[in-house]
Each structure stands twice: as structure tokens, then as C-alpha cells.
Length: 458
Ligand code: ADP
Image 1 (cartoon, rainbow, N blue to C red):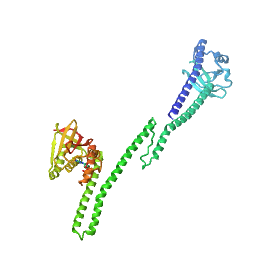
Image 2: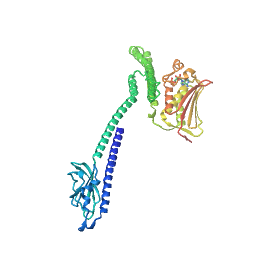
Image 3: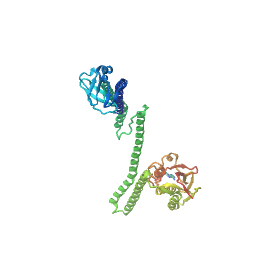
Image 4: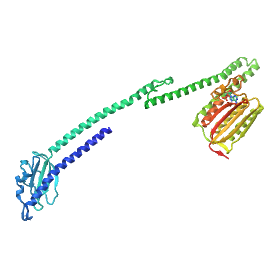
């Protein structure tokens, strides 16, 4: 539309220009005749003054004289001051120009007239003699001018219409060609149903932007599929974990129903089992809630948190359990350039270290658990090291997975949910940090947490 509009504007400008040029040529022609006649009047000599002894050379108004200036397209008429014709060129026949009674002085002017026999004429009226007011009217036929202009207008209109047609057809073809692969891509995307996340558009060979879009879409599907599969696994693991205590609670409830009245021992055992299993259930549910919170990322409240105070808290809460097992629990803060501040959620950070310290105590029977804090170059490093059972190389890869517990801890019936380290990993991630575990050559396990620090306070 813009292009057609531009072409139409060019056509209008061209017509206006052409009209001005043609009209200018006609004006020039009659102006030069007018000037020649004025020269002739000057030469013929006018004597006397207006009113007394005035004499205008009347022969100038004779038809022969006027015919001398006339041509098939140029007409001449000489009028007196009241607009009465003194003479006309013979080609005017019985016609005359519209009378314009004038009082001199008056500069030459142009009018546009339509005269029955002569047609469309441009008329120049010029006073020849200031005293008598005699004037010459020279008309130039605009027939050729009109027909030329009409032809050019028709031609330009055709050009505009044809251009519009060509532009419209071209744009349509171009747009269809450009959109065709997008239509095919949309069709391919529509075929992929929500329960078929393993299908792909598969346009790996296309090198253009559409191919890039298809590949990006496939990559997104890949991530979605992995995410969905992780969530499915989580739901299945969670159901499995919840099922065991529920089954035990159910079985003990049935025992109570049958035996509670008759056997006080059964009643006491069943009630204890129900209490223990419901506590385990609550622990799993709490763990899942905490994990969901830690994974919510941006949703957590953040403030500058002094890491040494958080660690001191976590160590303090672990101390009774360490003492119950006669374990040494040490906390050493080695932060050289003041105490590191982490920008994050104090409760989540406390949970992170509580989980690591609890595990260290849980899986250590003899020796000690050391917690060390150091900070350098904008990073706080926390080590939680124990002299416990250690973790075999195969399990080291998986201990951060949700619900993963090593066979050792299952066999020994160590209490736990398998969510503790998954929570640790989520909390470090949401604080843009990292966590890794390693086996100590001398036995035991070392957990190493790195967290970016805000600044240090002295
Ligand atoms: P749990 O609730 O079982 O402790 P976690 O996610 O905290 O769940 O730990 C996962 C598994 O990693 C544990 O079951 C245990 O086998 C192993 N683990 C974690 N911490 C230690 C440690 N300090 N020493 C030995 N094994 C550990």
C-alpha cells in the first residue's frame, strides 16, 4: 500500500508539474506577442494627451494587422476602455472574448475562457495605451494542452493501477512463500500432543531462521520432557516413601482393633509403631514442603546473613546429639577478612548446614565432626567433615538425588527420608552456590559448600 501510495503521489506531482510547464509555454507565447504589439504601438507614435488632441493609431486595430500576429491557435482582439472591440483577427469569426472594461493603469493579466467556437482559451489582457485605455487581448487555444494532459493522466492512472496490481500480487506471493514454512512448522507443532513429549519437529537440516526456531522448539521439548520425567519420578518416589509408613500405620490399626482389649503388649507396641510412623510421615511431608520452598528460587525473602552466626546456631542445635554419641563437634571460623555475609534466606541457610551436620553425626559412630568456615575472593567456603562410615564412590554420584539413600543406611535402619541432601543442593543453588561431597582417604566424608558473599563485616 505504501508503494502504491508513493507511486500515486509521484503521478500527481508529475501531472501538476506538466500542467505548469504546458501552461507556462502558452503564457510565454502570448506574452511575447503582446510585447511585440506594444513595441509596434510605441513605434507608430501616439500624439497629443488624453482628452485633447489624443490620437491612437487606429490602423493597428485593423484585421490585417491583427492577423499578422494570429496563428491557427492564437487569437487577437483589440478593445477600447469600455470593453468594446475595435478589431479582431479573422480566425475568431463571430466570436469575441469576454469584455473586461478597464481603467488604466493595469498590469497584464490572464483569464481562462471557454468560448463556443474557439474552445478552451488562455487569454492575456494588456493595456496598450495608458491614456485611452485601449487594450489587446491575446488568446491561446488550450486544446492541445488539455488533450496532452488528459492523455498523461490516463497513462499515469493505468501505471498506478498496474503497479498496484503487480505490487499486490508480488507481496501476496512473497508473503505466502515466507509464511509457508511457518505454517508447516505450526502444523508439525500441533501434531505434538502434551502426552507425546518425546516427538520432535526434527528439522535439523534447515539452515535458516525457521530451522533455528524448529531446533529451539525441539530443545525446549527436550527440557520439558526431562522436567516432566523428573517430576513423575519424584511423585512415584514420594508415593513409595509415603506408602511404607501408611501401610505400617494401617496394619497396626488393624492389630489394635483385634487385640487391643486382650493383649496390652500388642496395644502398646501398635500405638508406638503408629506414633513413630506418623512422625516419619510428617518428616517426609515437611521435607517435601521444604524442598518445594528451596526450589521456588526467586520467591524466597533475601537479606544479608552472617554465615558464622548461622553455622554457630546449626552446631549448637547438633551438639546434644553429638554428645549422646560421645562425638566431638568442633566449629572453626577462619574467615581472614572479616565474617562473610551471604545475601539470602537465613532460615534456608540454617537448614542447609543443619542437614549436613545432622548427617555427619548420624553416620559417625566414633571420632569427631568438624565444621570449618573460611572466606576469600567473594566466596565463603564451608566444610563439614566427619570420621564416619563414608560413602562409596557409586553412591557419591547419587546422594543429592531426591529420596536417594545408600543401601548401608537402609540396612542399618538409620532414620531419614532421603530428602536432606536434595534440600541442601536446592538451597545452595538458589543462593548461586555449589555443594560437593568427597570420601576422605583416612575414612569418613567431607562436604564442601561454596556460597558467593555480599561483602565482609569486620
Ligand atoms: P537421609 O535422610 O537418609 O539422611 P540425605 O539426603 O540427607 O537423606 O542423605 C542421603 C544419603 O546419603 C543418606 O541416606 C546416606 O546414605 C548418605 N549420607 C549423607 N551424609 C552422609 C555422611 N555424612 N556420611 C555417610 N553417608 C552420608
